[in-house]
Picture 1 (cartoon, rainbow, N blue to C red):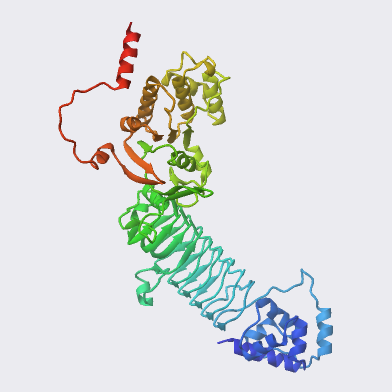
Picture 2 (picture 1 turned 90 degrees about the vertical axis):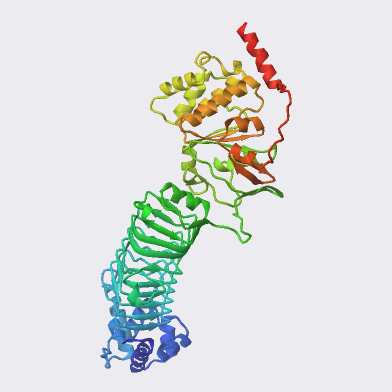
Length: 560
Protein backbone atom coordinates (compact mmCIF):
# COMPACT_ATOMS: atom_id res chain seq x y z
CA UNK A 1 0.00 0.00 0.00
CA UNK A 2 1.37 3.40 -1.00
CA UNK A 3 1.06 6.46 1.17
CA UNK A 4 2.44 9.97 1.36
CA UNK A 5 5.26 8.93 3.74
CA UNK A 6 6.50 6.27 1.36
CA UNK A 7 6.45 8.73 -1.56
CA UNK A 8 8.32 11.21 0.65
CA UNK A 9 11.01 8.62 1.34
CA UNK A 10 11.34 8.01 -2.41
CA UNK A 11 11.81 11.74 -3.07
CA UNK A 12 14.44 12.04 -0.30
CA UNK A 13 16.30 8.92 -1.51
CA UNK A 14 16.53 10.13 -5.12
CA UNK A 15 17.52 13.64 -4.04
CA UNK A 16 20.34 12.41 -1.80
CA UNK A 17 21.77 10.20 -4.54
CA UNK A 18 22.11 13.33 -6.67
CA UNK A 19 23.74 15.12 -3.72
CA UNK A 20 21.45 18.11 -3.92
CA UNK A 21 19.81 19.84 -0.97
CA UNK A 22 16.14 20.43 -0.31
CA UNK A 23 16.75 24.09 -1.07
CA UNK A 24 18.41 23.30 -4.40
CA UNK A 25 15.55 20.98 -5.35
CA UNK A 26 13.02 23.62 -4.30
CA UNK A 27 14.81 26.21 -6.45
CA UNK A 28 14.49 24.00 -9.53
CA UNK A 29 10.76 23.60 -8.81
CA UNK A 30 10.22 27.29 -7.98
CA UNK A 31 8.78 26.41 -4.57
CA UNK A 32 9.88 26.86 -0.96
CA UNK A 33 12.30 24.44 0.77
CA UNK A 34 9.63 23.99 3.47
CA UNK A 35 7.31 22.40 0.89
CA UNK A 36 10.01 19.87 -0.08
CA UNK A 37 10.55 19.12 3.59
CA UNK A 38 6.85 18.40 4.09
CA UNK A 39 6.89 16.00 1.13
CA UNK A 40 9.86 14.07 2.47
CA UNK A 41 8.30 13.86 5.95
CA UNK A 42 5.07 12.52 4.48
CA UNK A 43 3.03 15.51 5.68
CA UNK A 44 1.83 16.41 2.17
CA UNK A 45 2.25 15.34 -1.42
CA UNK A 46 3.00 17.16 -4.71
CA UNK A 47 0.32 17.36 -7.37
CA UNK A 48 0.62 15.21 -10.48
CA UNK A 49 2.17 18.01 -12.60
CA UNK A 50 4.84 18.73 -9.98
CA UNK A 51 5.44 15.01 -9.52
CA UNK A 52 6.15 14.67 -13.22
CA UNK A 53 8.63 17.56 -13.02
CA UNK A 54 10.24 15.89 -9.97
CA UNK A 55 10.74 12.71 -11.98
CA UNK A 56 12.55 14.69 -14.69
CA UNK A 57 14.79 16.53 -12.22
CA UNK A 58 15.63 13.40 -10.20
CA UNK A 59 16.22 11.28 -13.30
CA UNK A 60 13.60 8.66 -12.48
CA UNK A 61 10.56 7.17 -14.15
CA UNK A 62 7.21 8.49 -12.91
CA UNK A 63 6.31 4.98 -11.77
CA UNK A 64 9.32 5.09 -9.45
CA UNK A 65 7.11 6.81 -6.90
CA UNK A 66 4.49 4.05 -7.02
CA UNK A 67 6.79 1.00 -7.19
CA UNK A 68 8.65 -0.76 -4.45
CA UNK A 69 11.82 -1.34 -6.54
CA UNK A 70 14.33 1.41 -7.16
CA UNK A 71 14.76 2.75 -10.67
CA UNK A 72 17.29 5.51 -9.88
CA UNK A 73 20.42 5.47 -11.96
CA UNK A 74 23.08 5.73 -9.26
CA UNK A 75 25.82 6.47 -11.78
CA UNK A 76 24.26 9.74 -12.94
CA UNK A 77 25.86 12.86 -11.55
CA UNK A 78 24.08 16.19 -11.29
CA UNK A 79 26.14 17.53 -14.25
CA UNK A 80 25.35 14.48 -16.38
CA UNK A 81 21.68 14.71 -15.38
CA UNK A 82 21.57 18.35 -16.45
CA UNK A 83 23.06 17.49 -19.83
CA UNK A 84 20.70 14.54 -20.23
CA UNK A 85 17.62 16.70 -19.38
CA UNK A 86 18.73 19.36 -21.88
CA UNK A 87 19.25 16.79 -24.61
CA UNK A 88 15.97 15.12 -23.90
CA UNK A 89 13.74 18.19 -23.74
CA UNK A 90 10.78 16.73 -25.61
CA UNK A 91 8.87 18.36 -28.39
CA UNK A 92 5.06 18.32 -28.16
CA UNK A 93 4.98 15.20 -30.32
CA UNK A 94 7.68 13.48 -28.22
CA UNK A 95 6.16 14.24 -24.80
CA UNK A 96 5.17 11.16 -22.85
CA UNK A 97 1.63 10.88 -21.57
CA UNK A 98 1.35 10.94 -17.83
CA UNK A 99 0.52 7.50 -16.57
CA UNK A 100 -0.43 7.24 -12.93
CA UNK A 101 -1.69 4.20 -11.09
CA UNK A 102 -4.09 5.24 -8.33
CA UNK A 103 -5.04 1.67 -7.45
CA UNK A 104 -4.35 0.09 -4.05
CA UNK A 105 -3.11 3.37 -2.61
CA UNK A 106 -3.56 5.14 0.70
CA UNK A 107 -3.65 8.86 -0.07
CA UNK A 108 -4.16 11.67 2.43
CA UNK A 109 -4.04 15.47 1.94
CA UNK A 110 -2.54 15.06 -1.52
CA UNK A 111 -3.07 17.36 -4.48
CA UNK A 112 -3.88 15.49 -7.70
CA UNK A 113 -5.49 18.44 -9.46
CA UNK A 114 -5.38 18.13 -13.23
CA UNK A 115 -5.01 14.33 -13.06
CA UNK A 116 -5.45 12.55 -16.40
CA UNK A 117 -4.45 9.47 -18.38
CA UNK A 118 -5.24 7.03 -15.60
CA UNK A 119 -5.79 4.19 -18.04
CA UNK A 120 -8.46 2.66 -15.77
CA UNK A 121 -6.04 2.42 -12.81
CA UNK A 122 -8.27 3.73 -10.02
CA UNK A 123 -9.46 0.87 -7.82
CA UNK A 124 -9.28 -0.29 -4.20
CA UNK A 125 -7.80 2.95 -2.85
CA UNK A 126 -8.34 4.91 0.33
CA UNK A 127 -8.38 8.68 -0.19
CA UNK A 128 -9.00 11.40 2.36
CA UNK A 129 -8.96 15.18 1.95
CA UNK A 130 -7.32 14.97 -1.48
CA UNK A 131 -7.71 17.47 -4.33
CA UNK A 132 -8.77 16.24 -7.77
CA UNK A 133 -9.86 19.62 -9.15
CA UNK A 134 -10.25 19.77 -12.95
CA UNK A 135 -9.28 16.13 -13.39
CA UNK A 136 -10.17 13.71 -16.17
CA UNK A 137 -11.95 10.64 -14.78
CA UNK A 138 -13.91 9.94 -17.94
CA UNK A 139 -14.45 6.37 -19.07
CA UNK A 140 -13.06 4.86 -15.87
CA UNK A 141 -14.22 1.99 -13.69
CA UNK A 142 -13.87 3.35 -10.16
CA UNK A 143 -14.34 0.23 -8.04
CA UNK A 144 -13.99 -0.54 -4.33
CA UNK A 145 -12.74 2.94 -3.43
CA UNK A 146 -13.19 4.76 -0.15
CA UNK A 147 -13.22 8.48 -0.89
CA UNK A 148 -13.79 10.89 1.99
CA UNK A 149 -13.79 14.72 2.02
CA UNK A 150 -12.13 15.05 -1.39
CA UNK A 151 -12.67 17.85 -3.93
CA UNK A 152 -13.53 16.80 -7.52
CA UNK A 153 -14.84 20.22 -8.59
CA UNK A 154 -14.88 20.90 -12.36
CA UNK A 155 -13.82 17.33 -13.13
CA UNK A 156 -15.04 15.08 -15.93
CA UNK A 157 -16.64 11.78 -14.87
CA UNK A 158 -18.53 11.24 -18.11
CA UNK A 159 -19.20 7.63 -19.12
CA UNK A 160 -17.60 6.29 -15.93
CA UNK A 161 -18.81 3.47 -13.71
CA UNK A 162 -18.68 4.07 -9.97
CA UNK A 163 -19.09 0.64 -8.38
CA UNK A 164 -19.09 -0.68 -4.81
CA UNK A 165 -17.50 2.50 -3.46
CA UNK A 166 -17.93 4.72 -0.42
CA UNK A 167 -18.24 8.41 -1.32
CA UNK A 168 -18.61 10.59 1.77
CA UNK A 169 -18.64 14.40 2.12
CA UNK A 170 -17.05 14.98 -1.27
CA UNK A 171 -17.37 18.01 -3.56
CA UNK A 172 -18.61 17.35 -7.10
CA UNK A 173 -19.33 20.99 -7.98
CA UNK A 174 -19.80 21.66 -11.70
CA UNK A 175 -18.75 18.12 -12.55
CA UNK A 176 -19.82 16.40 -15.75
CA UNK A 177 -21.37 13.04 -14.92
CA UNK A 178 -22.89 12.46 -18.35
CA UNK A 179 -23.58 8.80 -18.99
CA UNK A 180 -22.09 7.74 -15.65
CA UNK A 181 -23.34 4.56 -13.94
CA UNK A 182 -23.65 4.20 -10.18
CA UNK A 183 -23.99 0.75 -8.68
CA UNK A 184 -23.52 -0.73 -5.21
CA UNK A 185 -22.09 2.50 -3.80
CA UNK A 186 -22.56 4.43 -0.57
CA UNK A 187 -22.98 8.18 -1.15
CA UNK A 188 -23.49 10.47 1.80
CA UNK A 189 -23.18 14.22 2.37
CA UNK A 190 -21.81 15.00 -1.11
CA UNK A 191 -22.24 18.37 -2.84
CA UNK A 192 -23.45 18.12 -6.46
CA UNK A 193 -23.98 21.84 -7.06
CA UNK A 194 -24.01 22.56 -10.78
CA UNK A 195 -23.34 18.94 -11.70
CA UNK A 196 -24.61 17.57 -15.01
CA UNK A 197 -26.41 14.23 -14.61
CA UNK A 198 -27.52 13.85 -18.24
CA UNK A 199 -27.98 10.17 -19.04
CA UNK A 200 -26.84 9.00 -15.58
CA UNK A 201 -28.04 5.56 -14.55
CA UNK A 202 -28.63 4.57 -10.92
CA UNK A 203 -28.66 0.80 -10.68
CA UNK A 204 -30.13 -1.23 -7.84
CA UNK A 205 -27.74 -0.97 -4.95
CA UNK A 206 -26.41 2.19 -6.56
CA UNK A 207 -26.64 4.91 -3.95
CA UNK A 208 -27.18 4.70 -0.25
CA UNK A 209 -27.13 6.94 2.73
CA UNK A 210 -27.40 6.33 6.44
CA UNK A 211 -27.99 2.62 6.18
CA UNK A 212 -25.43 -0.14 6.60
CA UNK A 213 -23.64 -1.66 3.65
CA UNK A 214 -25.72 -4.82 3.77
CA UNK A 215 -28.91 -2.78 3.85
CA UNK A 216 -27.71 -0.70 0.93
CA UNK A 217 -28.31 -3.53 -1.49
CA UNK A 218 -31.97 -3.53 -0.58
CA UNK A 219 -32.69 0.17 -0.19
CA UNK A 220 -30.82 3.02 -1.78
CA UNK A 221 -30.71 6.52 -0.34
CA UNK A 222 -29.04 9.77 -1.30
CA UNK A 223 -28.84 11.44 2.10
CA UNK A 224 -27.67 14.89 3.17
CA UNK A 225 -26.59 15.70 -0.36
CA UNK A 226 -26.56 19.22 -1.77
CA UNK A 227 -28.36 19.52 -5.10
CA UNK A 228 -28.15 23.02 -6.51
CA UNK A 229 -28.52 23.70 -10.26
CA UNK A 230 -28.16 19.96 -10.82
CA UNK A 231 -29.46 18.63 -14.15
CA UNK A 232 -31.12 15.22 -14.28
CA UNK A 233 -31.75 14.79 -17.98
CA UNK A 234 -32.74 11.64 -19.90
CA UNK A 235 -32.05 9.45 -16.87
CA UNK A 236 -33.51 6.21 -15.61
CA UNK A 237 -33.73 6.43 -11.81
CA UNK A 238 -34.63 3.31 -9.84
CA UNK A 239 -34.61 2.21 -6.19
CA UNK A 240 -33.57 5.59 -4.83
CA UNK A 241 -34.58 7.69 -1.84
CA UNK A 242 -33.76 11.41 -2.08
CA UNK A 243 -33.25 13.34 1.13
CA UNK A 244 -32.09 16.88 1.79
CA UNK A 245 -32.60 20.04 -0.28
CA UNK A 246 -32.97 20.20 -4.05
CA UNK A 247 -32.81 23.78 -5.37
CA UNK A 248 -32.90 25.02 -8.97
CA UNK A 249 -32.71 21.45 -10.26
CA UNK A 250 -34.11 19.92 -13.44
CA UNK A 251 -35.71 16.50 -13.90
CA UNK A 252 -36.40 16.31 -17.62
CA UNK A 253 -37.17 13.29 -19.82
CA UNK A 254 -36.50 10.92 -16.91
CA UNK A 255 -38.00 7.55 -16.01
CA UNK A 256 -38.76 6.59 -12.40
CA UNK A 257 -39.17 3.22 -10.71
CA UNK A 258 -39.50 2.86 -6.92
CA UNK A 259 -38.24 6.42 -6.30
CA UNK A 260 -39.03 8.19 -3.04
CA UNK A 261 -38.47 11.75 -1.85
CA UNK A 262 -38.35 11.59 1.93
CA UNK A 263 -37.99 14.60 4.24
CA UNK A 264 -36.84 16.51 1.18
CA UNK A 265 -37.22 20.22 0.45
CA UNK A 266 -37.80 21.06 -3.22
CA UNK A 267 -37.24 24.66 -4.35
CA UNK A 268 -37.49 25.92 -7.95
CA UNK A 269 -37.18 22.32 -9.17
CA UNK A 270 -38.57 21.48 -12.61
CA UNK A 271 -40.25 18.20 -13.54
CA UNK A 272 -40.81 18.26 -17.32
CA UNK A 273 -41.65 15.58 -19.85
CA UNK A 274 -40.95 12.79 -17.38
CA UNK A 275 -42.31 9.26 -17.62
CA UNK A 276 -44.10 7.48 -14.80
CA UNK A 277 -44.11 10.51 -12.49
CA UNK A 278 -47.02 8.86 -10.70
CA UNK A 279 -44.59 6.23 -9.38
CA UNK A 280 -42.73 8.74 -7.23
CA UNK A 281 -43.63 8.74 -3.54
CA UNK A 282 -43.35 11.84 -1.42
CA UNK A 283 -43.04 11.38 2.34
CA UNK A 284 -42.96 14.37 4.68
CA UNK A 285 -41.69 16.70 1.93
CA UNK A 286 -41.91 20.45 1.42
CA UNK A 287 -42.07 22.26 -1.90
CA UNK A 288 -42.47 25.80 -3.08
CA UNK A 289 -45.50 26.60 -5.20
CA UNK A 290 -43.67 26.51 -8.52
CA UNK A 291 -42.31 23.01 -7.93
CA UNK A 292 -45.70 21.91 -6.65
CA UNK A 293 -47.35 23.10 -9.86
CA UNK A 294 -44.86 21.22 -12.02
CA UNK A 295 -45.57 18.02 -10.11
CA UNK A 296 -49.29 18.68 -10.30
CA UNK A 297 -49.17 19.11 -14.08
CA UNK A 298 -47.20 15.88 -14.32
CA UNK A 299 -50.03 14.14 -12.42
CA UNK A 300 -47.74 13.14 -9.57
CA UNK A 301 -49.19 11.90 -6.30
CA UNK A 302 -48.93 15.03 -4.17
CA UNK A 303 -49.78 13.24 -0.97
CA UNK A 304 -46.98 13.90 1.47
CA UNK A 305 -46.09 17.38 0.14
CA UNK A 306 -46.79 20.60 1.98
CA UNK A 307 -46.03 24.11 0.85
CA UNK A 308 -42.72 25.53 1.91
CA UNK A 309 -43.26 28.12 4.63
CA UNK A 310 -41.32 30.83 6.32
CA UNK A 311 -40.32 30.71 9.97
CA UNK A 312 -43.46 32.54 10.83
CA UNK A 313 -45.54 29.76 9.35
CA UNK A 314 -47.03 31.65 6.40
CA UNK A 315 -46.01 31.22 2.80
CA UNK A 316 -43.59 33.87 1.70
CA UNK A 317 -45.66 34.78 -1.31
CA UNK A 318 -45.15 37.43 -3.95
CA UNK A 319 -43.45 40.64 -2.83
CA UNK A 320 -42.81 43.90 -4.66
CA UNK A 321 -41.72 47.37 -3.65
CA UNK A 322 -41.10 50.59 -5.56
CA UNK A 323 -38.22 52.31 -3.76
CA UNK A 324 -39.59 52.94 -0.27
CA UNK A 325 -43.21 52.05 -1.11
CA UNK A 326 -44.24 48.44 -0.50
CA UNK A 327 -47.01 47.34 -2.87
CA UNK A 328 -47.15 43.56 -2.40
CA UNK A 329 -46.29 42.10 0.98
CA UNK A 330 -46.93 38.41 0.34
CA UNK A 331 -49.50 37.38 -2.26
CA UNK A 332 -50.46 33.73 -2.82
CA UNK A 333 -53.14 32.30 -5.11
CA UNK A 334 -53.87 29.60 -7.66
CA UNK A 335 -55.95 29.88 -10.81
CA UNK A 336 -57.66 26.81 -12.24
CA UNK A 337 -57.29 26.27 -15.98
CA UNK A 338 -60.40 27.22 -17.97
CA UNK A 339 -61.86 29.31 -15.16
CA UNK A 340 -62.48 33.03 -14.58
CA UNK A 341 -60.46 34.37 -11.68
CA UNK A 342 -61.31 37.83 -10.42
CA UNK A 343 -58.79 39.85 -8.43
CA UNK A 344 -60.80 42.46 -6.59
CA UNK A 345 -59.32 45.55 -5.01
CA UNK A 346 -59.51 49.30 -4.73
CA UNK A 347 -57.37 51.68 -6.78
CA UNK A 348 -53.71 51.38 -5.78
CA UNK A 349 -54.15 47.97 -4.17
CA UNK A 350 -51.54 46.40 -6.49
CA UNK A 351 -53.74 44.60 -9.03
CA UNK A 352 -51.92 45.95 -12.09
CA UNK A 353 -48.55 45.22 -10.46
CA UNK A 354 -49.54 41.57 -10.10
CA UNK A 355 -50.65 41.43 -13.74
CA UNK A 356 -47.35 42.94 -14.89
CA UNK A 357 -45.37 40.37 -12.90
CA UNK A 358 -47.46 37.46 -14.18
CA UNK A 359 -47.06 38.68 -17.78
CA UNK A 360 -43.24 39.11 -17.40
CA UNK A 361 -43.38 42.91 -17.76
CA UNK A 362 -42.10 43.41 -14.22
CA UNK A 363 -39.81 41.39 -11.94
CA UNK A 364 -40.88 40.54 -8.43
CA UNK A 365 -38.59 41.21 -5.48
CA UNK A 366 -39.21 37.72 -4.10
CA UNK A 367 -41.61 34.82 -4.36
CA UNK A 368 -42.15 32.15 -6.99
CA UNK A 369 -44.47 32.76 -9.92
CA UNK A 370 -45.51 30.05 -12.36
CA UNK A 371 -47.73 30.72 -15.37
CA UNK A 372 -48.91 27.80 -17.48
CA UNK A 373 -46.17 25.67 -15.92
CA UNK A 374 -43.37 28.13 -16.68
CA UNK A 375 -41.43 30.20 -14.18
CA UNK A 376 -41.75 33.88 -15.13
CA UNK A 377 -38.08 34.56 -14.36
CA UNK A 378 -36.50 31.42 -15.81
CA UNK A 379 -38.79 30.90 -18.81
CA UNK A 380 -40.22 34.33 -19.72
CA UNK A 381 -40.34 33.51 -23.44
CA UNK A 382 -42.48 30.44 -22.86
CA UNK A 383 -44.81 32.47 -20.64
CA UNK A 384 -45.29 35.15 -23.28
CA UNK A 385 -46.07 32.60 -25.98
CA UNK A 386 -48.92 31.13 -23.93
CA UNK A 387 -50.62 34.32 -22.69
CA UNK A 388 -52.23 37.50 -23.89
CA UNK A 389 -52.68 40.80 -22.08
CA UNK A 390 -55.37 43.43 -22.37
CA UNK A 391 -54.57 46.50 -20.30
CA UNK A 392 -56.79 49.16 -18.81
CA UNK A 393 -56.66 51.15 -22.03
CA UNK A 394 -57.37 49.62 -25.42
CA UNK A 395 -54.09 48.99 -27.28
CA UNK A 396 -55.42 49.58 -30.79
CA UNK A 397 -54.19 51.72 -33.66
CA UNK A 398 -56.96 54.19 -34.41
CA UNK A 399 -55.49 55.07 -37.81
CA UNK A 400 -55.98 51.49 -39.02
CA UNK A 401 -59.25 49.68 -39.59
CA UNK A 402 -60.45 46.99 -37.23
CA UNK A 403 -59.49 44.34 -39.75
CA UNK A 404 -56.00 45.80 -40.23
CA UNK A 405 -55.40 45.83 -36.47
CA UNK A 406 -56.14 42.13 -36.13
CA UNK A 407 -54.17 41.23 -39.30
CA UNK A 408 -51.15 43.06 -37.89
CA UNK A 409 -51.21 40.93 -34.71
CA UNK A 410 -51.78 37.73 -36.68
CA UNK A 411 -48.71 38.42 -38.83
CA UNK A 412 -46.61 39.25 -35.76
CA UNK A 413 -47.56 35.83 -34.35
CA UNK A 414 -46.59 34.25 -37.72
CA UNK A 415 -49.94 32.53 -38.25
CA UNK A 416 -50.20 30.47 -41.43
CA UNK A 417 -53.77 31.61 -42.23
CA UNK A 418 -54.06 35.14 -40.80
CA UNK A 419 -57.02 36.33 -42.91
CA UNK A 420 -59.18 33.35 -41.97
CA UNK A 421 -58.39 33.95 -38.30
CA UNK A 422 -59.27 37.62 -38.70
CA UNK A 423 -62.65 36.90 -40.27
CA UNK A 424 -63.52 34.43 -37.53
CA UNK A 425 -62.63 36.89 -34.76
CA UNK A 426 -64.50 39.79 -36.37
CA UNK A 427 -67.61 37.64 -36.61
CA UNK A 428 -67.20 36.30 -33.09
CA UNK A 429 -67.00 39.78 -31.59
CA UNK A 430 -69.73 41.34 -33.72
CA UNK A 431 -67.39 43.62 -35.64
CA UNK A 432 -67.88 42.34 -39.18
CA UNK A 433 -69.94 45.33 -40.31
CA UNK A 434 -67.40 47.78 -38.91
CA UNK A 435 -64.33 45.77 -39.95
CA UNK A 436 -63.21 48.14 -42.69
CA UNK A 437 -63.84 51.35 -40.78
CA UNK A 438 -61.10 53.26 -39.01
CA UNK A 439 -60.96 52.43 -35.34
CA UNK A 440 -61.15 56.15 -34.53
CA UNK A 441 -64.85 55.92 -35.48
CA UNK A 442 -65.54 53.07 -33.02
CA UNK A 443 -67.44 53.47 -29.75
CA UNK A 444 -65.82 52.65 -26.41
CA UNK A 445 -67.43 49.21 -26.33
CA UNK A 446 -66.25 48.46 -29.86
CA UNK A 447 -62.73 49.56 -28.91
CA UNK A 448 -62.72 47.11 -26.04
CA UNK A 449 -64.18 44.25 -28.11
CA UNK A 450 -61.54 44.81 -30.78
CA UNK A 451 -58.83 44.91 -28.12
CA UNK A 452 -59.92 41.57 -26.68
CA UNK A 453 -60.25 40.09 -30.18
CA UNK A 454 -56.64 41.08 -30.88
CA UNK A 455 -55.61 39.42 -27.62
CA UNK A 456 -57.08 36.10 -28.77
CA UNK A 457 -55.03 35.86 -31.95
CA UNK A 458 -53.01 32.66 -31.70
CA UNK A 459 -55.39 31.07 -29.15
CA UNK A 460 -53.52 31.85 -25.91
CA UNK A 461 -54.09 29.53 -22.96
CA UNK A 462 -54.44 32.45 -20.56
CA UNK A 463 -55.69 36.00 -21.08
CA UNK A 464 -55.16 38.82 -18.62
CA UNK A 465 -57.91 41.46 -18.54
CA UNK A 466 -56.79 44.39 -16.41
CA UNK A 467 -59.96 46.33 -15.51
CA UNK A 468 -61.45 45.75 -18.98
CA UNK A 469 -64.66 47.69 -18.41
CA UNK A 470 -63.20 50.87 -16.90
CA UNK A 471 -64.84 53.88 -18.56
CA UNK A 472 -67.46 51.87 -20.44
CA UNK A 473 -71.18 52.55 -20.32
CA UNK A 474 -73.49 49.84 -18.95
CA UNK A 475 -74.32 48.44 -22.39
CA UNK A 476 -70.69 48.12 -23.41
CA UNK A 477 -69.87 46.62 -20.05
CA UNK A 478 -72.48 43.90 -20.50
CA UNK A 479 -71.08 43.20 -23.98
CA UNK A 480 -67.63 42.65 -22.49
CA UNK A 481 -69.07 40.42 -19.78
CA UNK A 482 -70.68 38.24 -22.44
CA UNK A 483 -67.38 37.91 -24.27
CA UNK A 484 -65.50 36.98 -21.10
CA UNK A 485 -68.00 34.22 -20.33
CA UNK A 486 -67.66 32.88 -23.88
CA UNK A 487 -63.87 32.80 -23.55
CA UNK A 488 -64.03 30.67 -20.41
CA UNK A 489 -66.65 28.47 -22.03
CA UNK A 490 -64.22 27.73 -24.87
CA UNK A 491 -61.46 26.67 -22.46
CA UNK A 492 -59.49 29.94 -22.14
CA UNK A 493 -58.35 30.84 -18.63
CA UNK A 494 -59.30 34.41 -17.77
CA UNK A 495 -57.48 36.44 -15.13
CA UNK A 496 -59.59 39.48 -14.43
CA UNK A 497 -58.82 42.49 -12.28
CA UNK A 498 -61.64 44.85 -11.38
CA UNK A 499 -62.78 47.38 -8.85
CA UNK A 500 -66.45 46.77 -9.70
CA UNK A 501 -68.06 44.43 -7.19
CA UNK A 502 -70.89 43.47 -9.49
CA UNK A 503 -68.43 42.57 -12.24
CA UNK A 504 -66.69 40.01 -10.07
CA UNK A 505 -70.05 38.74 -8.89
CA UNK A 506 -71.34 38.32 -12.46
CA UNK A 507 -68.26 36.71 -14.00
CA UNK A 508 -65.90 35.02 -11.60
CA UNK A 509 -65.72 31.36 -10.72
CA UNK A 510 -63.37 32.35 -7.94
CA UNK A 511 -62.73 35.71 -6.30
CA UNK A 512 -59.73 37.00 -4.38
CA UNK A 513 -59.75 40.28 -2.48
CA UNK A 514 -56.46 42.19 -2.46
CA UNK A 515 -55.99 44.59 0.44
CA UNK A 516 -52.83 46.24 1.79
CA UNK A 517 -50.59 44.10 -0.37
CA UNK A 518 -52.08 40.74 0.56
CA UNK A 519 -54.91 38.44 -0.42
CA UNK A 520 -57.09 38.71 2.65
CA UNK A 521 -59.74 36.26 1.42
CA UNK A 522 -60.27 33.98 -1.55
CA UNK A 523 -63.03 31.64 -2.67
CA UNK A 524 -66.21 31.25 -4.68
CA UNK A 525 -68.99 33.77 -4.30
CA UNK A 526 -70.90 31.28 -2.19
CA UNK A 527 -67.91 30.71 0.07
CA UNK A 528 -67.40 34.45 0.53
CA UNK A 529 -71.07 34.95 1.41
CA UNK A 530 -70.69 32.42 4.21
CA UNK A 531 -68.19 34.75 5.87
CA UNK A 532 -71.02 37.13 6.70
CA UNK A 533 -73.79 36.41 9.20
CA UNK A 534 -77.14 35.41 7.70
CA UNK A 535 -79.33 38.34 6.81
CA UNK A 536 -82.52 39.05 8.71
CA UNK A 537 -85.67 38.39 6.72
CA UNK A 538 -87.54 41.66 6.29
CA UNK A 539 -90.22 42.79 3.87
CA UNK A 540 -88.82 45.61 1.77
CA UNK A 541 -90.28 46.73 -1.49
CA UNK A 542 -87.62 46.17 -4.10
CA UNK A 543 -86.52 49.34 -5.80
CA UNK A 544 -84.90 49.27 -9.24
CA UNK A 545 -81.24 50.23 -9.49
CA UNK A 546 -80.15 53.13 -11.64
CA UNK A 547 -78.50 50.65 -14.00
CA UNK A 548 -81.75 48.68 -14.37
CA UNK A 549 -83.63 51.92 -15.06
CA UNK A 550 -81.09 52.96 -17.68
CA UNK A 551 -81.18 49.63 -19.49
CA UNK A 552 -84.98 49.52 -19.38
CA UNK A 553 -85.31 52.98 -20.89
CA UNK A 554 -82.68 52.38 -23.53
CA UNK A 555 -84.16 49.04 -24.39
CA UNK A 556 -87.65 50.51 -24.83
CA UNK A 557 -86.29 53.27 -27.06
CA UNK A 558 -84.57 50.73 -29.25
CA UNK A 559 -87.80 48.72 -29.55
CA UNK A 560 -89.51 51.77 -31.01
